[in-house]
Image 1: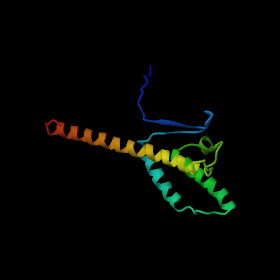
Image 2: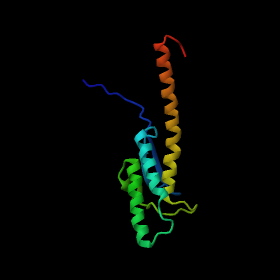
Image 3: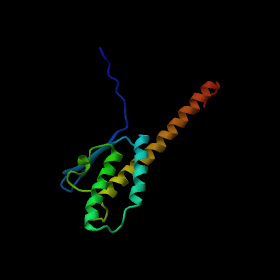
Image 4: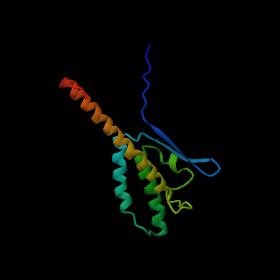
Length: 136
């Protein structure tokens, strides 16, 4: 018989809902996944280079590129995130949906990585102390 091993993976799920409670987009991430942080960093360079005032044709193309980039960061199908609202949709507060998503990723990933880093350092210190027959 095979035993199940259950682990707390740290995965967080995000649902974006409208004022009526309808979920219009969703994604899941593991904020401590170093690959997620690397992909987000890579894509942030792309966002810095975007033209502020594209033509209509370029804006349509840009919308698809942005959706693809965000789906790449999240490691998901772009339809999961952009099935009902596109990346360049501007909300009443003036932010584009793409900005809302990237802000949520960054605010979730940065503290999680810092927390995991501290835990690793503490574990290393304990291991070294045991090796040296000292207590921390």
